[in-house]
Length: 266
Image 1: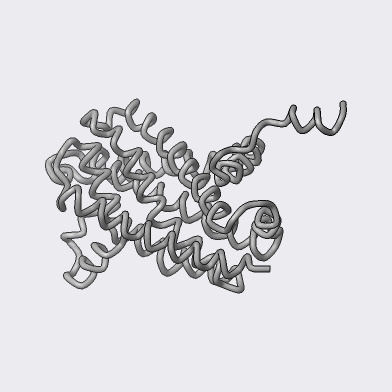
Image 2: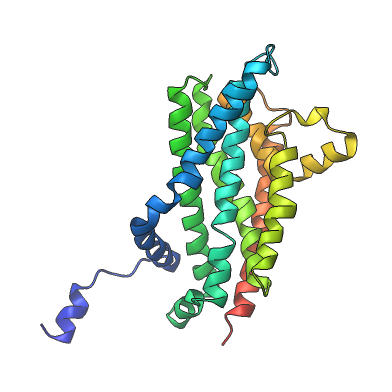
């Protein structure tokens, strides 16, 4: 076969270059998805059973008029989305800059920094959606979903994932040691998970901690997911929640794109 024939036989490049970057990660994930089953699916399910049924057995009156098992589902969905998003946005991004340098290889092709960033972020959202979709299916089988609005959890966690992944991309691209990534989990992810309304209402916290919880993107995701799974109105307006998460996503995207452009300049 001649060179011209081989060129014609190749599949056409995507109109959106970021799609090619996404395809790169999907091909790799096809070979490694089994390694993430426990952390992104089985562990949250075990947490649901442990807290929802174990701790919930000691909470006779439930929370907000529903049994604790059903109440905690929305928080666990949101916190799982956050943990998957940040897990995919820390060491993988740091590695692509510092260790295996995948980003530099991609930028050497006709790809801009925004394409490299957008394709990888799209893969992170894919990971969030697949993890939460499986989680939703299990909770539906367990009878913990009270409303068809539970399907709205998927776009909610996609926005939440983008709201936390985009600034985390910028952070992972700026730090010069992976020790800073461990500190992010220690001083941001764990406190958010504990105090953003996942396991108990934030109204039981002191005023200062309550407003700190309101400032986190996780609390807004928790409130929306809980409202969707229970079929009730959220504590804050839906538009307010979505605009706040969108602001995090947009600010993170702009910061990450600026950082990627600076780091990928040859």
